[in-house]
Every structure is written in structure tokens, then in C-alpha cells.
Length: 482
Image (cartoon, rainbow, N blue to C red; front, side, top):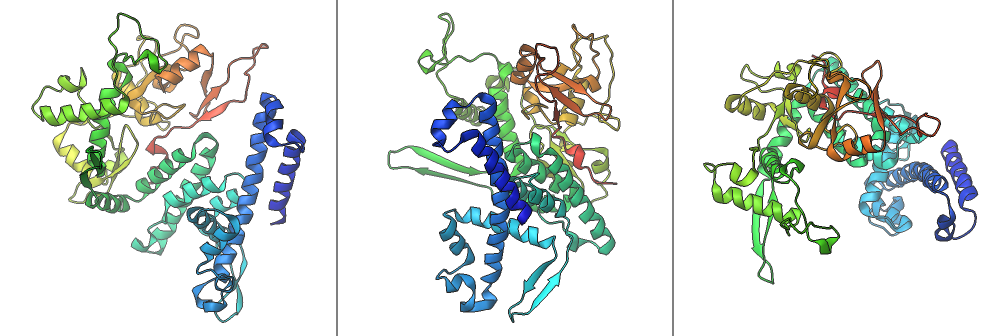
């Protein structure tokens, strides 16, 4: 704990050197851009160290307030019914925050040799090295924050070792540990929301049986509720199952996709509209509503172009050869992934699509790169775009869905005589693609197949900031061993 306190002390000392003893709102206004960002970085470092201390203390309060102690437990002695209520009263935080801190503290204690006090007051010591030890270690030394720790830990869940014998369970624990280590490497390139999604993707890929069970649970929870409020407005609340959520999301994406054409809004809302252009006054939410109503009205036999223009929406499912080998023989054991969102779907649902829809085979090498067409074609082929979609999982910069992306030559076609090879192409959404070209960013590829985002060149010609790894969101990185 001393080293953790030292980390906080050092971060606060650096923060004091930047801000001084003035009121933060006053001193922040006077900071240069670099100092402003450095101040936020130092604040994050101090907060991470304090979060580790809070986690350890909260877990200890919980342990000393165990029900086995009865009224002699710490929380009861202090006049609180539970340890959570006691910590809330002391820290002024929410119940959810206290729960997250306490869980992190439990995991930190689980990877150390710590004294245990049982209900009789006897002290013993235990040593454990659980699969989440890399996560706890990363939290302790400040590699990840407590929020990032919780996002990974909670969404990875627990390996289903009760379904396997001891040897298989040990292998499973190893795959969970490797998934945790992979996600730790990605924390600097992922938002907390992305980490949650990636952790669920890893869990569902590594545990196809659990994927089926969770799918069935969400299917059982599907519902539609309609009611009229006091103003006479009709309202609805929908809880989708995974399959129908994918259909609705695809339908709405088809209606809102950028390639549908420009849609202008009222100039009073801050956007200038050419006089000769008809104004569409609808918000995106209203357009989504009108799209769903159009689908309901026209029905399944209607011409899809009435609602969606020139492209009919549909669901595309990615299944790797390793997972496909698990399907069939009357047992749907493997899993697939929705191309647009990366969400895992169980093998039983994949088999329904195999029965009712066509398939397309995309062959990739060890780095996920197929289909070299050199410079004979300026544009990437449809098959190449499919391959990049499977490899990248969407925009390699911001994570936008594959349907919103364009193929980018990392060696520019005209300037660098780039080749139209999948290895030299990445998916970027329109916004990121324009930003990259307009601000002269570059994407490069190293020998291991990893792509790097390089800042625009400075006056001396060198990159203006360190290169940043662009990590794919594809499910391939969590593919279990055969």
C-alpha cells in the first residue's frame, strides 16, 4: 500500500507544480494547452492510486462487517445495516460505486497472501493465483483504472469450469487469463464502453454454451409495452431479443446511412441550407420512427426500395472455420458474430441462417489478409471489403460499424503508388477517412500485421506526436484453440 500512496503523492506534487495553490478554475484558465492536458493526466494518475486504496479499505470494511459477526460486526457497531451503507455514509458515493470498489478490493486481496479472520476470530493465511491476477496486478500498479478494471472483470465474468474436468478447466482458466491480458494491452486505445463490449465478445467467443444460455434468457425477456401518458401521447417500451434487435438496427442503419444522400436540416438549427434544396425537418429520431412505421405498413411483400432506397437491409453473420467446425451433427456448439456490431450469437441461431440464407467463404492468412489484386484495380473489390470487415470489425480509428466505412489505402494510391491489397487497406468511416487525408495523418503497418496511426508531420518532417496502435475490434483475436 505504501507504493500506492507514493504514487498518489507524486502525482499530487506534479499537479501542484502545474496549478499551484490558486483556485483550480482560475489557474486552469491560464494554462497552456500542453499543461492543461498534463494536469488531467496527473489527476487521473492520482485518482487511480486513490481508487486502489479505496478498494482495499472498502473490501476490508465488508469483511469486518460479515453477517457471521452479528451485531459485533463493524457496520452494525457504527449504526449501519450493511457495510455498503457504512462506506456510502463515509464517502458520499453511490451504492453502485461502493459495490464496484468493494469487488475490486476483493479481487486485489485474492491474489495476495493476506490474513483471513473467520467468525471465531481465528487468523489464517491463504494464497491464491486466480485467472484475473493480471487484471489485479494492472490495477495495483496503475496500468488500468478501477473503472477499466470493473468493465473488463464484470463483462468477462467467471469461466464455466464446473462444466469440465480438472484438466479442461485448467485450460479454460488459461484462455480467460489470456483474454484479460489482451484487453489490458488495449486499454489505452479503447473507451470504457469499448472495453465492456470487447470483454463480452471474448467471454461469448470462449464460452459458446454460455452464449446460448444468455441468448435464451434475453429471448425470454423480450417484451413490448404501450401506454398513454397524461397528455394523450402514446408511448412504447421495447425489450428486444438479440435476433430482432439486429434486424431493427440494420433497418434503421439502412435508413440513416450516409450513402443514402445528403439530408439538410433547418437553417435555424445552425446549418445553412441552399435555397434550391428541399429541407427535411425531421430529426434522426423522427426518421427512425417513420422508417419503422413504413416497414409495418408496407409489410413483407412490399418493394424494399419504398422504405430503404437502393439497398435492402439484411443481417450478415461472420463464422470462422474453427467455430463452423463446431456446428452440425445435431449439436449447435459454436458461435457466430454479427458483422455490424460484433455481438456474439449462439450456434443455434447461426444454423437457422445457414438454412435460410446463402453463404460466402472468405479465406484469410494467419494475419487475416487475403485477396491481393496489386495495382490492377484502383478500388478494393467487394470481397476485399468483406475480408477487411471481418479483420477490422469496423472503422479502425473510431470503431464505427462496417456499413458506414470506406476502404483506405495506407500507402496512398497516387502519392505513394499504393497497392490494392487487403494487407495495405483498412476500413475507416467517412469522417475519419476525411480527417486522415485533410490533416495528413498516416497509417502504417508493422511486420506483425499491427496498424499504427501516425500524427501529421511537424515542420521538420517528423510525426508531431507518438504513433498509436490501431487495434481491430474483430472477434478473431479471441478465437479459442481448436
